[in-house]
Length: 161
Image 1: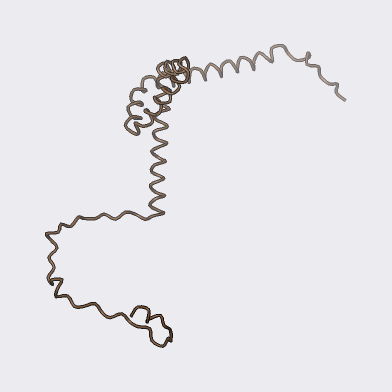
Image 2: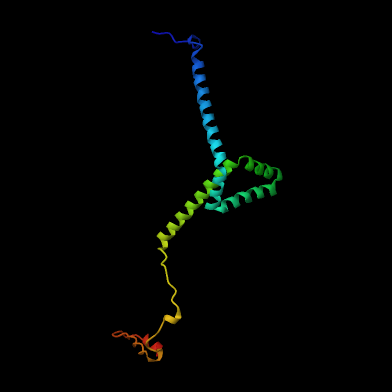
């Protein structure tokens, strides 16, 4: 039967390999994040303009929320405004994402409305000039007499005489 191994029996260099691999992985992740944010920084003005085109109300809502925060606590509002400027690429990406999300919600609501109420029919406005009646109203035949109930012995019909 083998005796249990003590943690001190291992090689002292065994943990260093895992530590180095972890450092390399973190370095690669930070380089990827740096590349992504530099790309996002250059594309942020285009992303911001696209978000305004898709739904400008998202931007107005964002500015309104910072304004309300500033009115409640001016220091936090100032910090949010400064961070919005410093982190402009992230804010632009957020605004674009919210604009696309709200656009998709509107499309889904319209589809649900069409499924529930049916599709609206196109119409054409007909002017009164083109409506030529061939028979004048005075010459129309009288409407037919309403049918009376036969075979029932009730006083219901007598109420209307």
